[in-house]
Image (cartoon, rainbow, N blue to C red; front, top):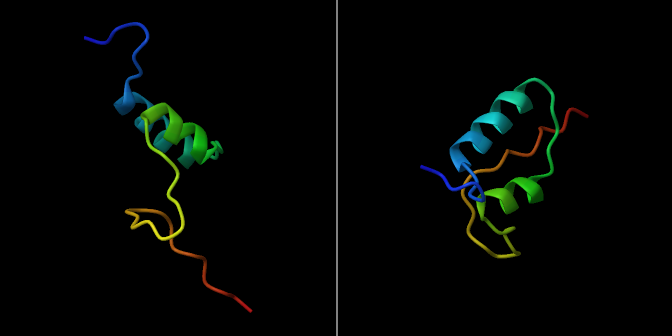
Length: 57
């Protein structure tokens, strides 16, 4: 059971996934803050992310 001041991380992630697919844009920093993750710094090993778009020139 969650306390009133606790965030349900699973619900936040599901909402961002669902609404993001429908076009909602959310700041990555805000999502990280809500789920307790920090921004990766230069040189950090990272997991996930999106591949850079291919250059169509």
